[in-house]
Length: 141
Image (tube, rainbow, N blue to C red; front, side, top):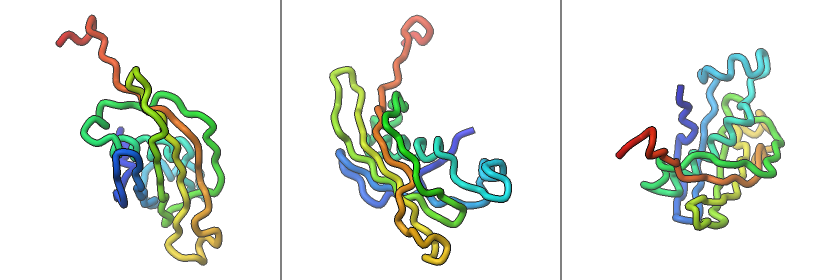
């Protein structure tokens, strides 16, 4: 199963991307997380950040996977009807092809009454995207 976590690209440069993930109660994973109080799982916030980073990396983005997550902190919950505003910034590129990123996700509620903390931080941290490694022995050209 593949989750599409980028619904809209607001801005994209080679060093920065801003995307939006709309959270809907129709999304299957919300049925169990948590019954009676559905919230977007933190790991899917991280996946949304990684997918946004792939957009930032352009055509090469499809050849990258999430390598390491560092100092990720979670704050405000993201509920159905909210949107997750994701900003990813390229910090550095390593010689081995890895890309270090800094990211944040903020809650954007449909109305201020639904979430008085409009714009509250849901997640923030750093992560590394690494190129997919193909083993020549098991995947000959």
